[in-house]
Image 1: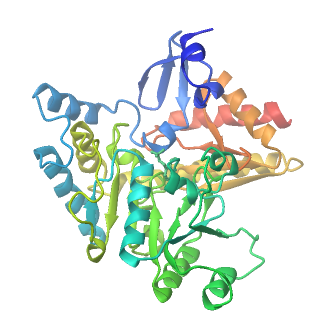
Image 2: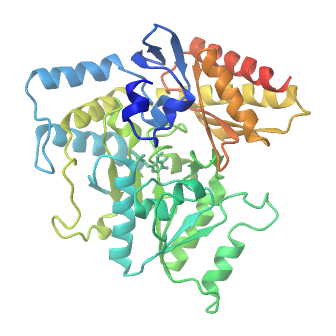
Image 3: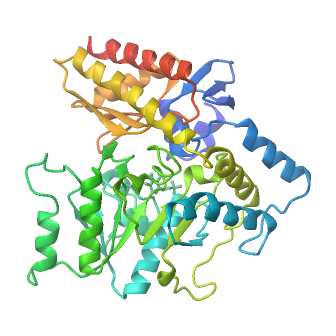
Length: 416
Ligand code: PLP
């Protein structure tokens, strides 16, 4: 028995799928203590879009720390925070004609979601939130109440209330017109649906099984919210920061959500940082009405600023992500076609891709085979039936090819 097994809680999970002890990492590669190399198609669940120990971001963080820059500052003004806000305004918001106030809600994605839900309720004076089937928004009680997965929900210990799930895009395989059910409930005074404060949505459901909503569905949703006075929250915690190509995943739909949640790769270097973006007219918090100790982790501000400057001043990363995403998509379609007697489906957008199996056991076995062969991938979806591919956006073409051939061999080992 090692110290992880004797001391760490049974709740630990990723270490069970990847039973080794990691020690070092650089770019798209991790190494365990024995020196075995692993190609990373997981990227810290979307927190490492720019790779492990990215040398440009590392330099900025090291220089800042060596110069005795402020590390911890709650929400005091610091030079590092000013740099981040100025860069975020100039590089991200202004070129996209987005007018948002920036709130620092705490370090994690769940913090960004909790702040969004609280704010929507405070602004509207309503309590009910609409979420979607197979949504994932985090593990705190508010975020969990709008999360679909029954196993995760069962950890709450109290009723998870004030949320009503609606069918996500293509939930009925195109058999019903979009939003038929939702619109009918809103219009019917006998439906029993409480007037919603907000709708919370992921444009691509990462944990829910790499379900990519169509741009027209997202536009339809934004329009429905607008017509009914419901705030639209886009949770871009996992799909933001370029995972699907553009900086914000909702850009393909040309919509402007009322509130946007960002975390994971906004910290650039895998350091904890989250932002809740809100339209200025929603900025109704009293000073300190929502706060938290870890809202000023300045090394994360420094890495975030550097990442924006290095990767988002032009469209090179966006274009390469789209091209690499197509390459992965073609590889997945190839596998689906090669083994047409095994029901499989290729899914996703940009560099958030998935291979769905009918039998979740097969997806699990594919990831196990891949791990043995030196490739890290996790499963997602309600039953873990989707092999999820999320390499760093900065992965080289060669590494991508190597990873895809390990994937192909791992699938072959399971289905052939
Ligand atoms: N929202 C989405 C879409 C996520 O994918 C996640 C985490 O995977 C979260 C929120 C929660 O983020 P965190 O685990 O940092 O609290």
